[in-house]
Image 1 (cartoon, helix red, strand yellow):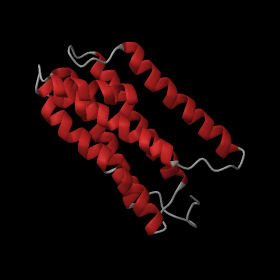
Image 2 (cartoon, one colour; image 1 turned 180 degrees about the vertical axis):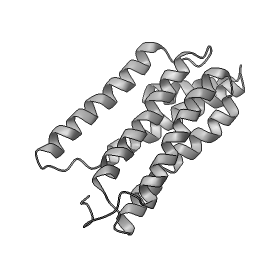
Image 3 (cartoon, one colour; image 1 turned 120 degrees about the horizontal axis):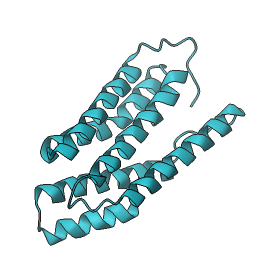
Image 4 (tube, helix red, strand yellow; image 1 turned 90 degrees about the vertical axis):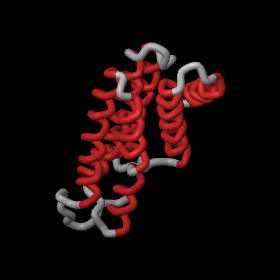
Amino acid sequence: MTESKNPSIYNVPNALTSVRFGLAIGVMILIPNGEYLIGLVIFIVAASTDWMDGYWARKYGQVTKLGRIFDPFVDKIIICGTFIALVEVEGAGVKSWMATIVVGRELLVTSLRGMIEGSGGDFSASQLGKWKMVLQCGAVIAILVTLLNPGNNILDWTSFVFLWGA
């Protein structure tokens, strides 16, 4: 994805990303405090609007250097922060080593992105990366739904499968 000529950083895609950042912080506060339903709803909004900022930026020529850095950063905050928050929750099934693997993978990819793009290469999101995000979001959603419905074996297995797939 190439940047637009002289785009302002004050645009709709960067505003959407900023809202997603605020929603991510809300999710990280709500989950450890047992507010699973509102945390689930806010997580779904934050995660499902991820595609909107990139689509808008490309369609309306509002791709910026800030957006190319900020959007994947916020994606990492949403996923990593939520997994870290779930470590504190009894019954979530997320262990500290699992969250560490998720965070470590995201840090590695971010480092590679910086290295490749710093040397003039392109490291735009791939289909594999998009599917990884879908699995991670599916894991979080399944875990939160399971926490809202304790003792449901089907939900337990669903969250287990998504968690290991993520």
